[in-house]
Image (cartoon, rainbow, N blue to C red; front, side, top):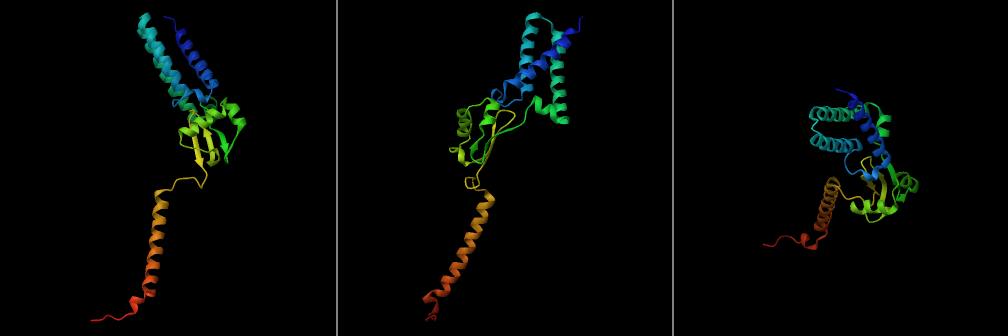
Length: 187
């Protein structure tokens, strides 16, 4: 039995990882490029196994695919430069309400595509965005300008307490200034 299929599977995985990484972030939904390759490779290999009846060879190849995925993920945890090349880093596309056109060009993304991602997040105005990034999985991360950010529960409770304290002080002042409070009780 020839073991060249082992080297062929490793080379195929490596080339597929590089090609999908070159394809760019916008073509990847939520899975990492390596996870997509493994999924496709497993599906394709399973199809070949059914057609060619090479069960044991396919079982070894599938095991290599999964071990390759685990090995590369482990290396990405240990070596940041490898993570940058295989998975990619986030790319800032909006800073202080201004689109960074050079970043969009690097990502091969149009302004319309960026605007679509913003609308999907419920953002109507680019000037409301303090910072926006395209994440390594192709998703949009953003931080709104301070005056647009929604109120948190903590801020609401704090404002409510301040409002109650203000009303308590004003009601005490109103009682002191009320003319009917100065009339003695008539029995």
